[in-house]
Image 1: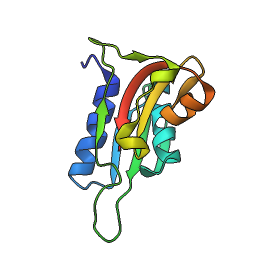
Image 2: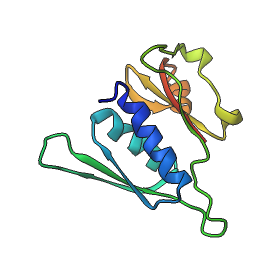
Image 3: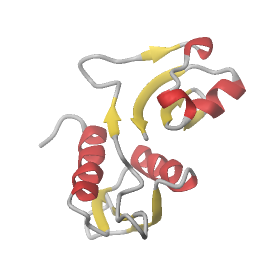
Image 4: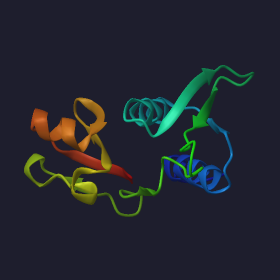
Length: 133
């Protein structure tokens, strides 16, 4: 039993990318589904599929994205910021910029999960979930 399912999700993706796996499977939750959609929209993964299993939790199959020439993963670093022992909340005017705008910060706001750029545009703050670049 793990206490931080989001950190487990990010670690599975990080480990699969380092081992050059094409597909990684993670247990599903609504928050993980939203993070997966953001990673797909921003081009960090090539595809994803939500599957139902015998238990009602479900499964997310994520197809990782690699550069066809260099075989390097599109995800260089994926890091958990806010964790259960130390939550990281930010105001709308102090949202972090990841690598001067080249990466994304995933932020959980009152309007749902979004990137730091979207949150800055909508002028909402929230909990910083992860950095991806």
